Length: 88
Image 1: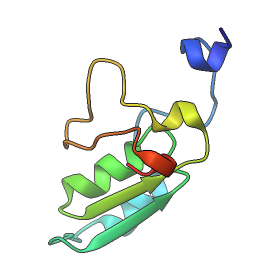
Image 2: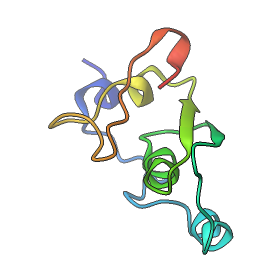
Image 3: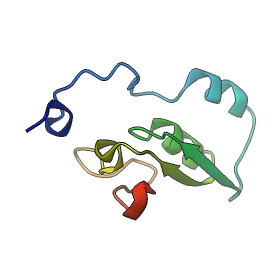
Image 4: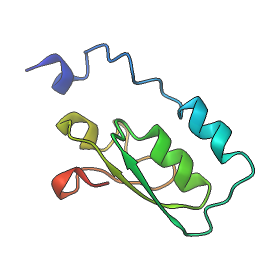
């Protein structure tokens, strides 16, 4: 099994928190059901952050490992993973 698939690889862009620039941009904003697209969503921190603000989020990533649900279940916002074409 490859390291990425096993979850043992070190991936430097996976921070476990939303992107700081996104957090700054979103300060004081509410989604109110508006749509947001997160291209290159990776493990979903940015998508989950936007969903928590009330956006209807679609996340896309070409990496198959990024499109699987997180270990331990889905994101706390209810976002899923693994939809056809890498859409979550």
